[in-house]
Length: 272
Image (cartoon, rainbow, N blue to C red; front, side):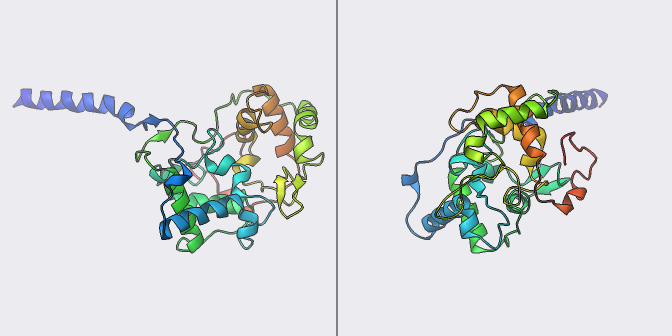
């Protein structure tokens, strides 16, 4: 009897030792489906509508957007660019624990988080046609991605958070590398037909202080891999941190509920 118990204990211990490795999501390559794969009929219409809402958000959802941005101002190329917070594979990754919320949240909750912070606006009803269309587009983008896996390129590329920012140097980097598109005063470049060709980086038409992009190292990671547009990776990590320190600290809308962020006490050092 004792030998049976000992054998069972050994098996249990071996299983416990192997669990951390098993619990890590499998990394899978990013694959963006061809638009020709969008089906005909109501589902295809919803997918196309979802893409329209996400790429022309300011115009399509004026009651929910409080600034001049579109979702694709940060989620580049319709949410299909690696390390620009792509949407490929997201429908199989949620529900997911978010330390900022201190709980497990749904993808719909995560989308509304962006509407309230990055878009400085109001959440969409979960059962609305607009939310369903957005979910349909993200589900289509996730075609073929196994549930529970992690698409390579999800989120932003990691950056060294021990780098100390130099805002004065960041201002010089901004003037040389960013101002031609985003404006000398961060006001963006307006489209004569409405909205912006290049989004504002600060001011009332930009993201609020509760947005992820208002955090120093999050913004720096995005800049390092994606900016200047079409020349991502040309700035050094230090330059990216410096320029992020310059533009994230410029005036922008407040977000009062941020006082409730990171309720478990694991607040990152660059949190606003």
